[in-house]
Amino acid sequence: MEKKVVLVTGASGYLGGRLCRALFNSGHHVKAFVRRTSDVSSLTPPTDGGSNGGTLELVYGDVTDYQSLLQACSGCHVIFHAAALVEHWLPDPSRFFPVNVGGLKNVLQAYKEAGTIEKIVYTSSFFALGPTDGYVADETQIHPGKFFCTEYEKSKAIADKVALDAASEGLPIVLVYPGVIYGPGKVTTANTVANIMIERFNGRLPGYTGQANDRCSFSHVDDVVDGHIAAMDKGKPGERYLLTGQNASLKEVLDIAAMITQTKKPSFGIPIFILEVYGWISVLLSKINGKSPLISPPMVRVIKHQWSYSCDKAKAELDYHPRSLKEGLSEVLPWLKNLGLIKY
Ligand SMILES: NC(=O)c1ccc[n+]([C@@H]2O[C@H](COP(=O)([O-])OP(=O)(O)OC[C@H]3O[C@@H](n4cnc5c(N)ncnc54)[C@H](OP(=O)(O)O)[C@@H]3O)[C@@H](O)[C@H]2O)c1
Image 1 (tube, rainbow, N blue to C red):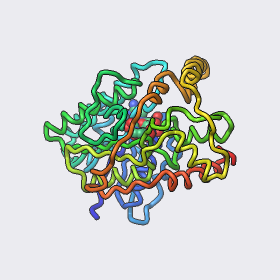
Image 2 (cartoon, rainbow, N blue to C red; image 1 turned 60 degrees about the vertical axis):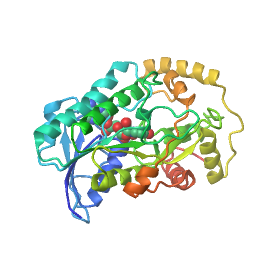
Image 3 (cartoon, rainbow, N blue to C red; image 1 turned 180 degrees about the vertical axis):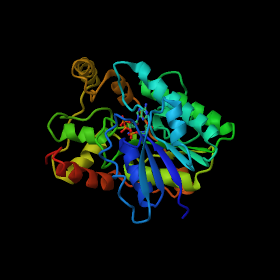
Image 4 (cartoon, rainbow, N blue to C red; image 1 turned 120 degrees about the horizontal axis):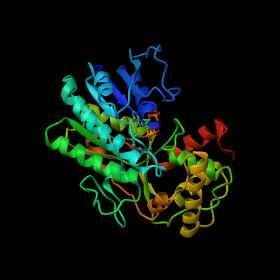
């Protein structure tokens, strides 16, 4: 296998950290793009030598600071652009666009100026394709753009258009769309399933939310990482690949968790108006204590829709093999228990 110099933006994040580790273990030279303020504790120390000769270097910058990005691109063959503001609610929603759209535009400009980059793998999101009420969508779906549950969804949908326009200009960009990512790794706000399990197994989530047919697609973080590396190796420039997994309702997820832990299944659904009230109270509290709310009014809008996708194209072209929720959660729950974050 050819060893490459790869830049990973969002390296201090949940997905980026796992991606850096996998690239490092495969023998690549990883330039982990982090901010001076980032918590880099989950990244392999730069002094470690990978058994395959991989190396990892921290490079500092901000995706909204073009010069720092251009400098980091020096000598790189591949950019994995995973950095984003991943929140369902922020007190200042205008923060999403400079990072999620402006950051991608800077990456595309840096590609043009750096001159050494062969491929860009851009981490989009299922949100960029939009809801799938009553059906299962594939890569042909374009976000209708009429209504957005969250500003995050809107920013990812606009960034998707920027990425597709770049592809039609001939830039070698491969677009990957994970589902809700779950699995071991940093417990950031973006690690939604870990946060839900922490609430559930600490007695703060007595029931499930949504209806039985309100399905969402769940992707294990290591399957998503494998999908990203396959996108670098085999992804066709300009193509979109859904790196999604099992489509399931929150009730199904909690029932599987109950079966694995031999605990009681949630027996009732929390009415949507209670979630709405809880969401409003949570954002008010969040404005006081500065912590991200678990539920917010935009999150309740997300819960009211379906987000089911097919990953058949990635299976066929990227050899993507997503695991089932039962398999994935059988690993996640003991991991959270060992960390002391949940009890059962
Ligand atoms: N989590 C999911 O369920 C999910 C699902 C589908 C798609 N995605 C996509 O996957 C990607 C990674 O998300 P994640 O789950 O790993 O989220 P995360 O844990 O919140 O990580 C986000 C990363 O982006 C970095 N970042 C934010 N603003 C930045 C800036 N201005 N300059 C440089 N870096 C910046 C963060 O750095 P700091 O550490 O300094 O904050 C962090 O490393 C995102 O593109 C997201 O849209 C996530």
